[in-house]
Length: 183
Image (cartoon, rainbow, N blue to C red; front, top):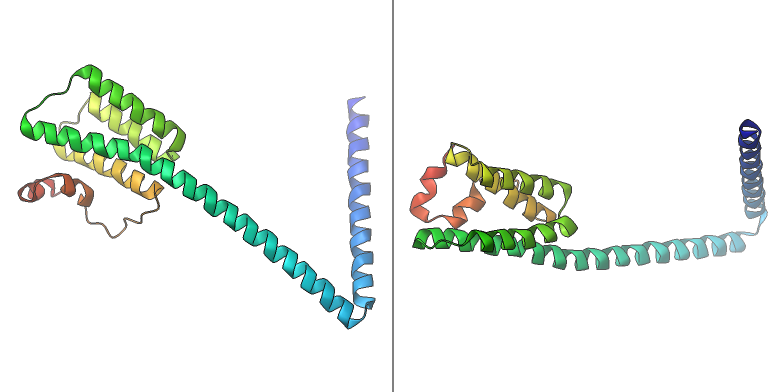
């Protein structure tokens, strides 16, 4: 019974395709036989409609991307603020409570779950694993942070190909500490 139904479906699809082909063929024949002014009018109308549809689609895409950019920027800004606050507190010898750190990271994670690209989420997960079990070489930790920061920036549309090694991490450190990041 199932095979008969499947074959009827195939036959129906073949009939529909044949009808579309025949209508297309007839339409082309009618178009070719029409006077030049009619053909020009039809082409002008078709181009106008296609242009309108294309421009409308692009405008909607731009509006969606603009709204998403704003929300992504806000979500990523929470991480940047947190990172700078942690580095500043370490330099001053101030410690945060574990509860405060966990709560802040949960808020950052919620934003990333909604707005982060796959690459950003993967880099963030790696960052979190390294935060729990830091690598022995501090340079590896900076590589991890740098990769995460670049993922955020790429998600926001930046092209960091010309950025020097550890260029973002160096912004966090004092100028006299930059030499520590030579690989």
